[in-house]
Length: 284
Image (cartoon, rainbow, N blue to C red; front, side):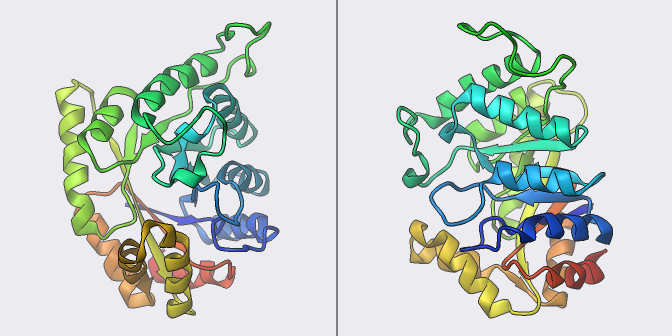
């Protein structure tokens, strides 16, 4: 199982200039990937910007959006944004997409929080059309450079429609911020949908888990704050699942490996760059 690390782009009032240095240190430490967190209505850094900054600061580490909120974006704009990050990084982006569950993230007029599943399915076709170099209606030119590749897509979601979307249009799946025993069923659902769709090989299964070493309680407080708009019960549950300390992190890694995750991205709960080496020493 590969081990990646998140970018702290959605820590409240994050020090934005930490992000390039965070990316460099993560690559030097030997992590497989850098993951971003997607949210609009929060005082952090937009995931596409964080990934672009990480791309410019690194050379080889993978870049994953886990997850970007697809339906809050106009489809053509997101397709170009994603390809641009993929292009400048030398083909290192994997675009993880979710529907979004917080109404305040839908700030673009005409792109509201209803009908997001159907809208995303239409948008996926637009993304792929753009990446193939097709010229959109009303445009004089393609939106991306000739020779651009189709950016690999992962999808989140805990319902059958999400599993079917992976099998139909994606290369894999990203689990929610929940313990391994709660994600195991989703992994099985994706595997089944993949097989039923007649896809060859296996879906790429990615898990995410929050961690904190130097300040576990402070990290849990930050996670609670981030999820607080979902209600106290949900925020409290996700915060309580933060792996605090080296032994808890090792146990979390073992649990996700046991359910067949291909990659686990450990999401930070602060912008303390020293956490990178602390967790690297624990899991790499």
